[in-house]
Amino acid sequence: FGKDRHNVNRVMELGRKCIQSGGVFEPEICPDTMRLVGFHYQTERQHAYAHRFGSYFSTADGTHDTNLHRLICVPYVCRCSLGISHLIGVGYHPSESSPNIIRSLKLFGISAIPAGDEDNVFGEE
Image (tube, rainbow, N blue to C red; front, side, top):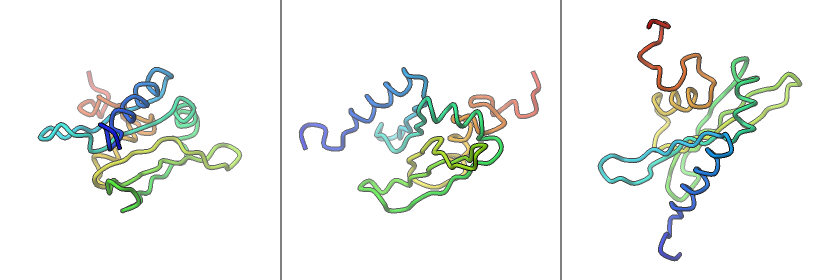
């Protein structure tokens, strides 16, 4: 497996490339262990589809026990004007909890509340 048997460095490198190309990558780091415990990922093309069609119809559904690290994979899917389903982001989380899902929705531009503006829900200054 080499020195990095879990390929965390490779995941982080791919995340940086995603951000540089206009996508979204936000790792979830455990504050106690400083280990990667999940992440939110959306490519530039997925970002464009999410902004164009994500507010009309989008869905998310988690899978359980399908990978080595037992992370829950949550794909986010929308339908375009032709009725074709498109993957518009993916989250890998330790649980399928509301905060993880809501954070992904905000980061991916699907939520009406922008990421980082959780305290300003009603548009107040």
